[in-house]
Length: 136
Image (cartoon, rainbow, N blue to C red; front, side, top):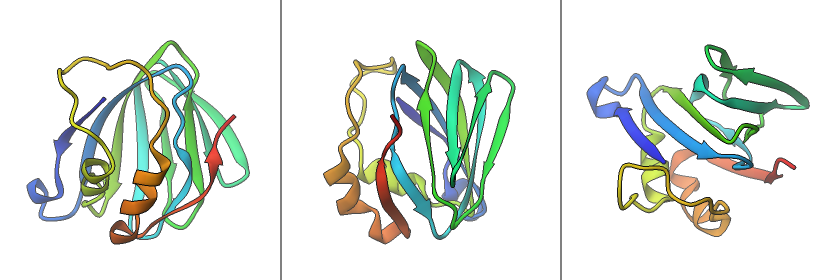
């Protein structure tokens, strides 16, 4: 479940902030952002974050920086995780909108696998490359 807190149109293109909630085991494919740096700040729960060949575990109150051009992914390792994603410059919210369906309600929906074909169909415009599978 995602909610755009600050779109690039709110920040003159400088920043995007997205609030995310996800269930145990959720993990996007290994990918690279070519246009923006990203970061996560965990509000609740636990994530294992892969940055290039390194993995680290971050929990509530912790922050991780994910620089552009460095492969990364993450996995939710608690029953649920609640975190903020920051991207600078802004604009990556468009990818999340294009590669996702709107939630029918503002509550965490049942767990699903990432729709990798849909993601692949939308990454080009955002200079994101999917380079590997989700984390195990």
